[in-house]
Image (tube, rainbow, N blue to C red):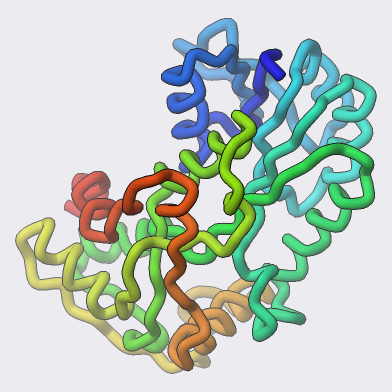
Amino acid sequence: MDGRILVIGARGGVGRHVVEQLVAAGRRVRGSVRKLAAGDSADVVVADLTKPDTLRGALDGVSAVFLYAPTEGAAGFVGAAKAAGVEHVVLLSSGSVLLPAAVGNLIAEEHRAVERELAESGLRWTPIRPLVLANNALNWAGSVRDERVVRLVHADAVTAPVHERDIAAVAVAALLGGGEHVSELLTGPELLSQERQVELIGEAVGADVRIEELPPDQARARFGGSAAFDAVLEFIAAARAGGSPATATAERVLGRPPASFAEWVDDHVDEFR
């Protein structure tokens, strides 16, 4: 399979690395975005998963697709991909679909639904299943910059955040036909408490960053009590109870250790200053 690869969400935290790594591997890449910006190349096109008509041109001549699991539009994508003769879809799903404790969790169930859609589509597809993205820590950036504080529920909850560049590398391995373990639970290399993650950010910016522990009810009141927020709180509570493991998937697929959370912080330190 040597046709063009479409990266849907080419400006996303993972998608932009998928584009860069595919180009570095010598593959022909087309990126899709919802709105063009100044400086976009001819290889960037507009496409919206909720508007299947916009997918026709994006998928023309494409043999493989990198796709973020969409909260809506999966059925329209499947129809457009089949009509275009796409041979392989690599889906950025969630490791939560592999966790028995996450059955019933809103976020996990949304990803399971997209996986079912692709499984029943007749398309060849491969899921990538990162559990905790290091990029989630960017949610703390504003309060770190402005107040030198991070407000947390269960600061002692332990996870193994994975760098978006490593997620992309596993996706690229799948797109290029390799990686026997690409669909296994994907994490970073080490388990760290949320408290330790905040400490590492503080060390990188050269400042004491205080943690303000919030009970779940106060967190809902402060940040909004949506169903998605409650699903995140469920994950954090499970992580506190040991339900967020570290795995060797990245090293098995990539043949090297994945980046540590400290390395991720170094890559993003300016966003916390």
